[in-house]
Amino acid sequence: MSQIQSYRSVSRDQSRNTYNGRSRTQKRGRQFKKAYIHPSKFIRSAKPISEDAYIPMHSFQDFALDSLLKRNLSTMGFSSPTPIQDQAIPHGLAMKDIVGIANTGTGKTAAFAMPVLHRLITEPASKAIILAPTRELAEQIEQQCRLIGKGSGLDGALLIGGTSMGPQLKDLRYNPRIIIGTPGRIKDHLERGSLRISDCNIVVLDEVDRMLDMGFVHDITHILNQTNNTRQSFYFSATLDARVKGIIESFSHEPIHISVKLGDTSDNVDQNIVNIASNDYKIDKLHNILIQEGTTKTLVFDDTHRSVEKLSKELATRGFLVDSIHGGKSQPQRQRVLNRFKNNEINVLIATDVAARGLDVSDITHVINYSLPQSYDDYVHRIGRTGRAGKIGYALTFIDR
Image (cartoon, rainbow, N blue to C red; front, side, top):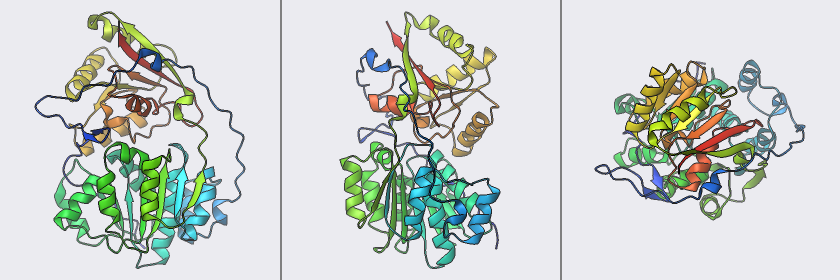
């Protein structure tokens, strides 16, 4: 069988970031006023939670997975499952609905990808749709599915913004069996008639809480209402608040609840502020932080496309290996920058809040808020890019005196 097909990106630029459910799209230069956050909220010592070594109940070879998937997992070096994988995969293979509560970076993608791919391989009539809050996360899911499902002959479509519509419309005409994308883009295709999902009997919502934070509740409801009534559903989230519970209760039946969350990501982040008296010296303070010993990979947040580009160019003239990412760049451009960051071709990434959600880079040592976030929730998402996989990270926030 041929290798799982490479998905192409599609649809208009994903620019509908939201703030508490309201559009954050800029109109004629206007932005919503930032919420006031007392500086003390940006100061907190890291309080890592000690984690006992987890002893899995299974190995990947123990799971009742198709032999092709087992071979691929072995080739990828997968041996012992993470807690969420160990506990979720057996229920997924038994076609149960699953609610998984786990932090980012705990292996959630493989926890749903394995049972989903197994069912698609063994049931030719099955189809799956996977929703993620951001383009970057959707691409990461697609990449892992492609690796785990290599040689399966499964084809799919990646429905996200920032790339040409034409190639994706061509892929959709072949009725792909895996649809991966962001809610807004998938809804666009449903409304124009280029996508039909009434035969999708497998549904995955990854990082449900973040999708709801970004204002996608109506899009998600619209999409789920059009899937098959006898679907199997996977819901993965870092939190299980009333909004998440409402979605789950409306669209699933007696789901299995699995929680392996140890604490907030910010518990592993040492947080502090940098006082500045004048913007004239702000860039110099940032420069000094970036050259300190231990500052090896840094994510810097600024407000706008223009300010991000300006800061990136200034740091480049000072000799830093730096690049930028924001909503004004096409998806291929953004992906190239992220790959450079992951591969250590650059060690400083300047970004708008487009990178606060869905950016999966495990070795970021520092997050710097060069500009204040719109809200405290945005701050938590920003600093959650560091202090991952049990490591201590550092977050610094610039404050005007």
